Length: 276
Ligand SMILES: [Zn+2]
Image (cartoon, rainbow, N blue to C red; front, side):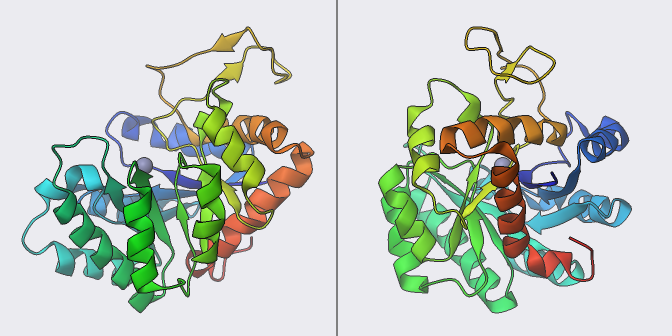
């Protein structure tokens, strides 16, 4: 089995000191590629640099909805310059309406610009949506079906919305939240997603998965290691895949193969010339 982590943040200050070890541990469990998303202009340079240093790191550049207030006046030029400099995707970008005090109109403006850039430059897009599902669909109605696919990361929407996003050429990405036994909504979404539309991610260093303690990786319902404060890393992706395959009702190998092939379809523009 081989794996592609479709969404993580390897520039993060909590893990960067151990980046060599992190990449090595990912390789040791056959995580071939890691899509590392920048979140603001401040970490564009480091994200690009990491992708040059480690061939398994594929960069994305974008302004995360949590950080749009921190963007500079020249953010559009900077973003485009990085996208042109590196074989890269767009993101992390999106809409987060969890906190009512956040400026929703500003989020929409910034997200729409990222979408336009992805379409113009023919790049995959890594999208963050929280509690803004209807607005996201309204925006997609205006852009139409994406010519280069993208994904919705750590999907937390309704199962019924999954086919709607698939129609716009988006893939549905499942994170360690699928390993949370009480995450019924995520389990319903993974049952609903088409075979050629799911991908997997860790969202490193966040969303540490609920892993079973046993060495052989069998789920033991009452023996979870819950890790609110623990830092996640891409080497945990096979464990997430194993539990996600159970939710989907598929054999682990078949499920992992589909997730890998699907992810290669999304990130093909970044993989050119590299053996998948
Ligand atoms: Zn993220």
